[in-house]
Length: 214
Image (cartoon, rainbow, N blue to C red; front, side, top):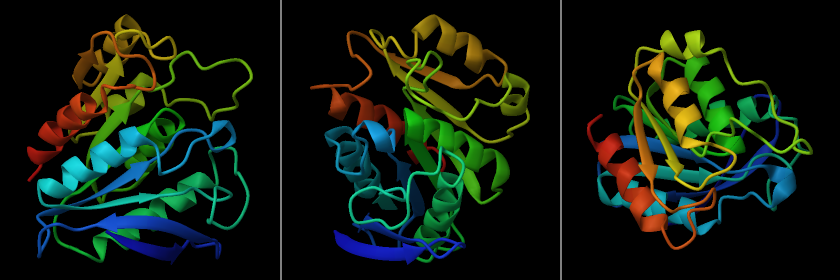
């Protein structure tokens, strides 16, 4: 694994960890972490598990910290400036394999950013949204989710993944959200929003889905 730095279009320096298990990579992947103001960072065990799984399948996999988190420069941007971070991360990981698909995976707050990025960036070939916060706590500020019809216009593969006990992403509401796009919906029964002790199971679901892009 390699520690790297890269820059956004507004000059913010971001830190990341890049894992490449296969040369040349078969594809590229970027992971977006949970809310910066509620302990989110690239170093959560769930994101480690997903990154390692994707790398083992031949993806060059990048996990990074949004602006204002740990060693990344800048300050929290309300989910809006983080789109610049997302775009910069996609650009950086594609240096490893410019002509292969790029898969993006976001968890919680990172899922909102990943969805927004994917809708605006044609370089994204597939998308996994983990614990998409359909019912965020009132004290957590998030940019509005796109209308489901916007997701319906996204003509690339989408995975919606949640724990069966996730109060922020109720399984029935997630199924309704995904039905407009005919997205794949996977529920890890008994898991909560954090997938504690179920990280490998969640990572395998993401990896199986991403591998089909290759």
